[in-house]
Image 1 (cartoon, rainbow, N blue to C red):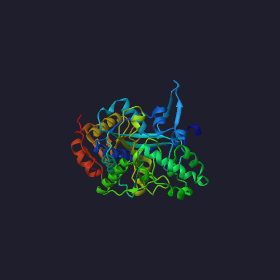
Image 2 (cartoon, helix red, strand yellow):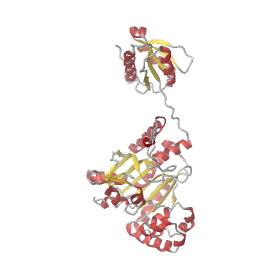
Image 3 (cartoon, rainbow, N blue to C red):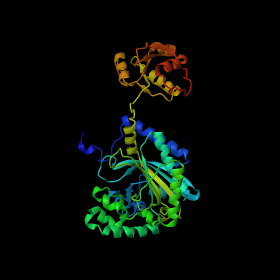
Image 4 (cartoon, rainbow, N blue to C red):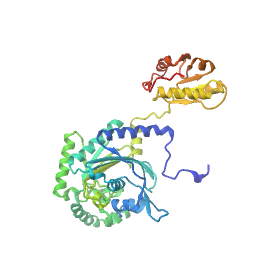
Length: 436
């Protein structure tokens, strides 16, 4: 194969043998979100670059280093979305969705960041985003935590650690940044190059450094919690109290910050120790000033994002998933010239049993070759249609995975025969098998 036709590094195919796991994961998450009253919104993958520059912040690593941006033929600067919140805020403002609040929305799909591909971090990755507009209460914060806990329960994911913090309001963060700059300026000789750059642009991000040599310096830094304004402090205390009342254990991590400029107040992360360095599987927090920054009226909001690749990997580590592709029935004419009849029979069976996987034989050949293909398909049962069967409006049912004898039967007896051979709860009728 021509090397130029291979997938872009860090942008991987999801192959058929893995796609069923993705589908199960997505449906499970969507069912919980619907349970909590969230509605799906489908957002463009491409936005005007200004959507992200204004919301995420010009000084963030995402905007400066990681965005896939380009000029289109009209000269507009566009960007493949690196995250979902900014585009969602743009959509609710543009379409006046906030005339009715609270507004609870979710979305799902690929995001793009130009990073060095590694385990748990790809250039095209997939996220579920959840956004709650119109409530400033700690109860809203806590419900989002309860929602995620229910998702973990449904996915049978365990041993996640919840870390929480409060970033306070803009004024308390400004005062705290001044304390951080003063503290880290006294340790310039020990800071790495990246932290020195962050010191002037966004000193809070130094607290998020993964450089192990900075661990002791960061642990000695002033705590943001000591700089909180009174309202944020009371909000955070009530949030913790609600979690405690609901039986949720949370670790207060005063070093927890989010990498995007729009966060304020409550922030949180769900973390695992089983995925190495990329252990955060879900993160979020409040962004009460973002709608105003993007041209709307002031509106409290909170949201989260969870990485689907990491959730799938963690799910498979904790309870390996069976991604075997299964076929229930293989419908096959016994000779050339009867393929249209077998096609019509396959459609009759699909109408009658919509939850079964039914594969149709579509190539010519002798019966022996046809049966070999039926066996290779992995189907449990072959449905054979020959001249005699057509005349009597019957089929021959041939078990492929057991030593049971094949049987010829009509439509009225077929359900009982299949139920015995398949032993499958999905043998639910969509309609009666039509008679021709």
